[in-house]
Length: 312
Image (cartoon, rainbow, N blue to C red; front, side, top):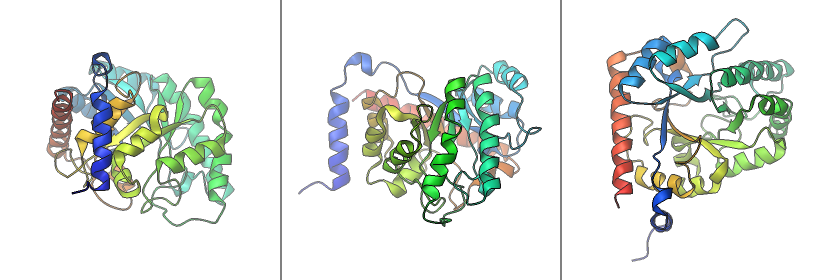
């Protein structure tokens, strides 16, 4: 019987993985955790949880919504240093209030001002990327027919800031149930070409969105290639790894094939649960035992799966 299309892709990725040399498989994937899903929990408590689960990196909530708001670099580094954590990057949060694609100039200016605060902060805490969403999360309906171009033009205005601070602008494709533009890796590449600035050239993937929008997650990872600098991870139900049906083994093989286990490139957990707009999670009261189990289960599962794949 002929293989199904996804099985054919799985097979091709497996074959390429088996062709890797021992030194290409030696380093392990760098694991991180996006802390904005922990809600209103103090950073020190989140850091303690991640350290206990042996998560070496944290993706910080981009919470500088105004000049007087958000993490302070010196205090943040002190807290993370106490627990032996490093910053992978910062998760930029783009809502209708700071929408790069908005048809309201005030909202686009707010997005520019937000980036002006987040990029220097990311540099100050040792992060390597800032996640950028071209359109507001929670707004799946387009403003008009030119929002793609308008968003790219707005982001290009701050391309030089990314260059100045040595921070990668990582464009995140998000499923069409949550945003109105840029849903796939191919869309992200077109968007980057539209921005057309050397400071804006990378991609932040998310396997939960990819399962909705891509033909095959592994193939999309291969297509992203060297531009992929961060990959958000959750199971098929957007819960802890191992609690859904995500083909994690194929994802891991694809990451190794593109050399993702080398350099400053991260697998960052962001299991937010199902729903059309996940942003309310940032304001929630944390359920500490539930969050502890979420982290421990997910990290253990991916490490076990990674070792299983490498032992093939």
